[in-house]
Length: 244
Image 1: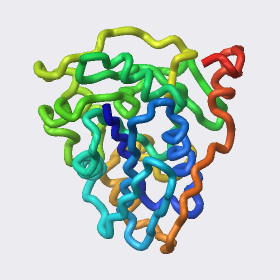
Image 2 (image 1 turned 90 degrees about the vertical axis):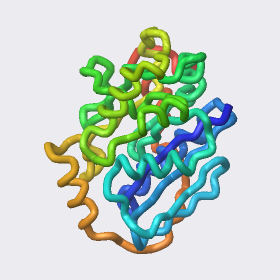
Image 3 (image 1 turned 60 degrees about the vertical axis):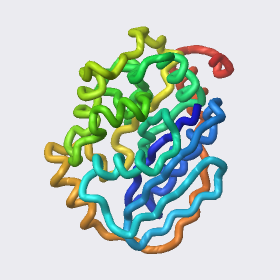
């Protein structure tokens, strides 16, 4: 079954281009085969290019009014019946898609409710968990029935999570907690100055981001990881890096 990953990005090159490249590398390392990654770039003046298999870069000449509208547009262009958000500054471990599909089973919405947290102090497993919608998996039919993301940059993950988890026509995946060694998502904090989640007024901050200087050009994306994140998580748990 085709799975589409939607990666919304804006004005990463050249200084923070490596974040997007690591996100793409995370996609390429997934052990699920029938997949695509749509990279939706709406930074006027910046053309992103990537020839990696399964990666489709869509350069839009005008910025979307909100992150929610941008994600909805990416999903409208996707070809998969299974959908997931793919943040451009986080890391997904290679079993994210396959494990999510296994946990979804015949349901419509799966949320792992757990992830690694990486900040300037290092990798954490004992932090308070957030909404986790950015690492969830849902069917297109469920997305359609709840009318997608709100046309806003404020708590769009919280809103669609509530829509998906409360709608009577959206079947929830069975509750089954992941063990720490099964966690497949690394949520990064403080890696760039444009993180919406760190602002009290995300919509205002999103507007400010759109007014920041843009270095125009054609940027070729070269997917890579700056470190072996599977080994990093295993080391944090005191486990063998070869145990997945």
